[in-house]
Length: 315
Length: 134
Image (cartoon, rainbow over all chains, first blue to last red; front, side, top):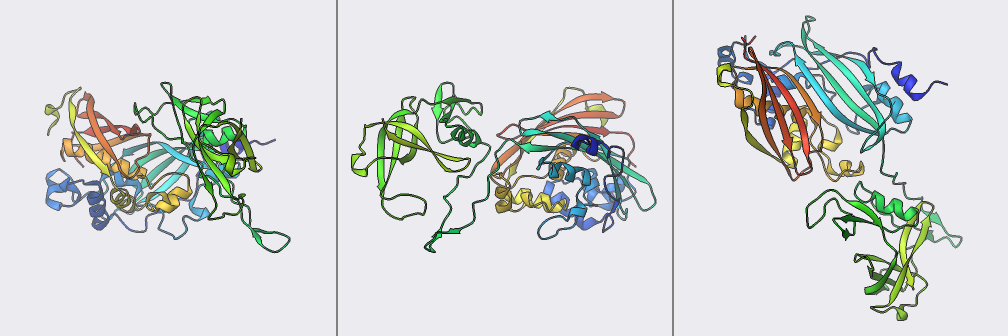
């Protein structure tokens, strides 16, 4: 059977797509705008006399603009499929939807001059084995570009390496469609959390019926965040809480009544025995029985398949 | 500056680049890069990142401007090798440092590092040629 890697590697050495010719020749307005954006005050890019004094035949473009001239035009809604690369689309179709550029090299033949009309040709130069990275499992794909002008003169070349990966973040599934109950009243979906790099571990833990917290030098913290507030460290360990704690504070929600919850709803701030506090709903508890200091135990509520929320019940 | 002023180990003056939304968008448009994550915050958040972030072509532009500020127009930029790391999000500052790694004839290799508060945004080598400009 032909694997994804076989299909992708069949592209190596071949043109990744049709050559692209710039819509406009190298020109002063685009150079000027680029210099302003970068804060580049080198006069050879905008001043004829300065360029000649530096040995150039006239105004030259900043070398870093080599791949600017052939960029795709703005299009509302993003690029068309034809503007992409089929070798990368293969990975998208196989679930490697993430993309991040990791390396760029450029080598310049000569400085581009006003009037050069740039054509870019692209080869697929390498597809790596599957690699495990911090972002997810994926493949590095290297593209090699060559730039020439209207006379076929070599202007420069570039390599561009991207990682196509399956993100480590679990997919945030779209909310289920609004359904109608038998009596005709609409049934709204339960609100969902925004899952990010920082808190994905927490939600994954809940799916496994575990209450997980970040710990840095023994300090636990919640809600999840990128940095330890004391040391400023971005490193952390993940520790599992016992689930035992006491009610530190609480409110009983009466209004507004959001669909998907039972009212009156006791919402508790629980101090866990590990010293970290967490907000969650009480379950199987009469509002009048909820009081500060009372012992509680964590439990888990499966709102929908693969969507689990923490909750507390009296210990 | 001429080649005789340069020795291996020499440091470049630091440059702090404030990463504002304006800087990111100005760079994206100046490099004709209309990917929505470089100008549209809502679209960026829809893709799981907190805000818009700098595109690679702008990073390359800043790296070369940083070296060019130091070496002047007598040197020609011959090649660049860029390794990308932590994204440049709105509200950050990228601080460039640089050091001459090698001098060989008229060729000079400069190592450049652009750090933001997450870590290294870019680590690059810029190769300069102090021979005659074309």
